[in-house]
Image 1 (cartoon, rainbow, N blue to C red):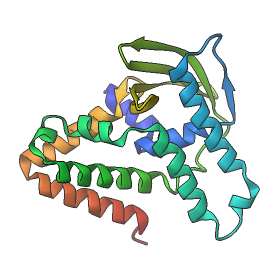
Image 2: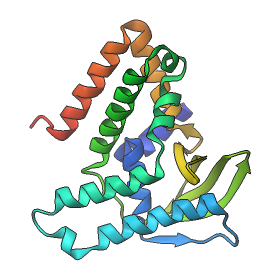
Image 3: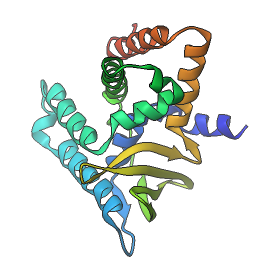
Image 4: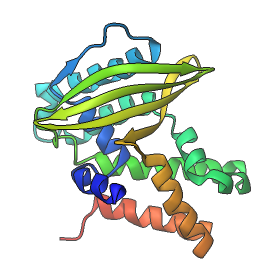
Length: 214
């Protein structure tokens, strides 16, 4: 029942990156009394996204693709798509060779990017409050809360250090891990069909998002 409730509340923000970009674009924020490197990493990406979305020159006709590419760059610098892919595939990741792993990372990244492309204007004055962060041996969790009217939704970013920077590998919304949700879906497809079928389904879903049926 809890999962159905959460899904209903988050239906307009169906995909992981869509959620991140929309949260990044929120109009207001409450700063914590003290913030460490993980929180500041998230905040830095938020500021970059806001700058892009507020750039009047990028709102001009014909600039949509340029704006999308700029947003993808900012989000890509904060996410570890490789770690997300590895965790989403779980044990199945070990069965792939290096070429297959890179192919899946690229496909998963493309799928997520295409999912959020048309959703960046979906926010409407919500606020994101930074609560605190937890650190443990190269991993961190930045806890935030999204406030919209009388509704408050906990939203936490799970991060790890990579190449000297903090990268997001999962987002937990109201206690529900989005990477874990993908893991369940991917595992079911692989076990009932095949890994090749999963790849094909992701490709088709990504293409459908780009060119939705009228």
